[in-house]
Each structure stands twice: as C-alpha cells, then as structure tokens.
Image (cartoon, rainbow, N blue to C red):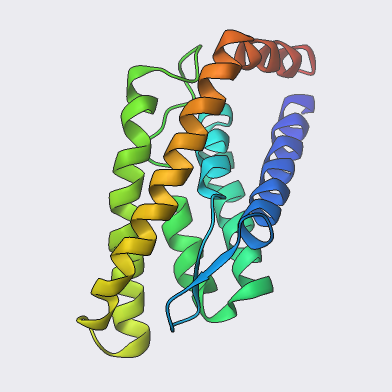
Length: 173
C-alpha cells in the first residue's frame, strides 16, 4: 500500500512540474493556431524513466493537459493523448536513466509528437496543408526537450539519482 502511495505522489509531483514547465517556463507562442513551443516534454521523458509506465502515462496526460487548459484549451484533448504516447519509447526498467533505449527515445518521441500535432491541427482546422508549417516549431520543441533530457539524465546518472530514488521507494513498501 505504501509503495502505491509513493508512486502516486511521484506521479503528482511530475504532473505539477510538467504543467509549470510547459505552461510558464520558456513558453513561446508559435504560429497562428494557438500552439506554443515549450520544453516540458523533457520532464515527461524524466517521468517515463523514473515511473512505471501507467504512472508515467498519467503524469504526462495530467501535466500536458493542465498546461493546455491553462494556456491553449482547444489543444488539451489532443495533448493528453499525444503526451501519453511520447512516454512509450522510454523504459523505467533500467538501473540508469541513459540506458540505450532512453538515449534513442527522445527522437522517437519527437516523431510521435510532430505527427500527433500535425494530425490534430489538420482535424481542428480542416486542412492538412497548413499544419506543415508547424513542423519547425515541433522540431525546436522536441529537439530542445531532448537536449535538456539528455543533459539532465547524464548529470543524474553521475549522481546515481535513479538508484537512490528507487531505494527510497523500496523503503516505503
């Protein structure tokens, strides 16, 4: 029971950090369709490597969805789905954050995100031509989030943060 409480608590903390990072820190409006560039995806990636998959999916959905509800509500339904999907390339099963799979994962997540928002924008605005212009913003957002994730992950791996976090969670069981 305590282990579940710790996981739910970490999920809530990640959701809150994702919301704040996405909605307010480096939040740069982009294009005419209400989209914006942010680096909150870096925290979604972190949630995906620290939390078991169902919890990471939840943190991503709540954090990304809340950020959109606060800043660009029309995007919230698409964001909830897309942010859940971008956690899938990552694994939390490795002892290190920068396991081989997690090094490649941000780039797979970028493809998922860009494709997802392209489809969402096409559906929302009734054109699949205009959203092509949004790929540049998606590339900046995903590329920036990947760099932030990789730098943070390398620093955290050096400090053995994941192992220490897992020990704390196991003590709470």
